[in-house]
Length: 279
Figure 1: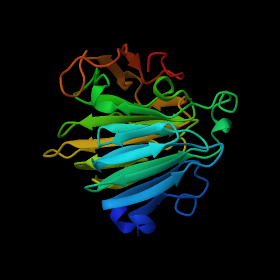
Figure 2: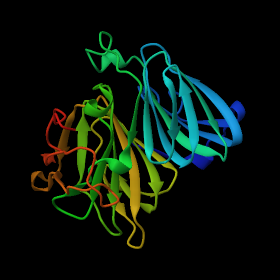
Figure 3: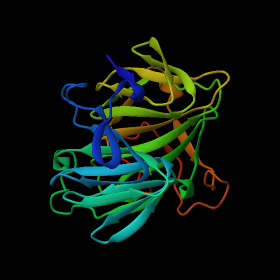
């Protein structure tokens, strides 16, 4: 059965000067999970250090505020528009003048999910999801923006995307085979159905599905629902209860702000087992 909880129910642990770390996805909360997720908050003029274990991959997704991330190759700004990919063994120092909040995801022992990982570990990379192409659902008004992909970050150990549901929008009932799967609700309200049982969800909720559990979401009739979802590994099967409702995503030729995106992605079906080469 799905595990659903809100970040407010998890106590923060000090992890630096003016910094707190809330362990959201853990082996204690979800026995056997191969994905770890933390919510990190840095107060104004605070700082913290992150070290990715050898053999693991990690990423930071900005949620609010701005921070500076320093590593061996220099420094970058981390905003709510950014996703930073942290390679194995990397140590990063993060400080914020005005305060910042972000998600930290980690996949331990990434080589178990990506056979080429040990020989070719990917380097540090920074993506701006607001410049990525928006894809429209062929069946409804939902939109998809990729956050973490094999093409963006150079590994098949994990894939992530942002999904936008306009008010009242619902997806089709389906399940995944061969990947762990979790969602983090960024904003809005709605209902998640797990094995056809409804659960209300809101901003700050974490939803973890075991392999093969049927699920779908529906936005509240008066509120947009936006969430980030991640899979480990990036390639897996998706099976729909109704084969006529397979999600197909079409390019729009624009980013979320209406500009030309930094790259092109062709239309593709969520029924594809392998990640499309341009994703």
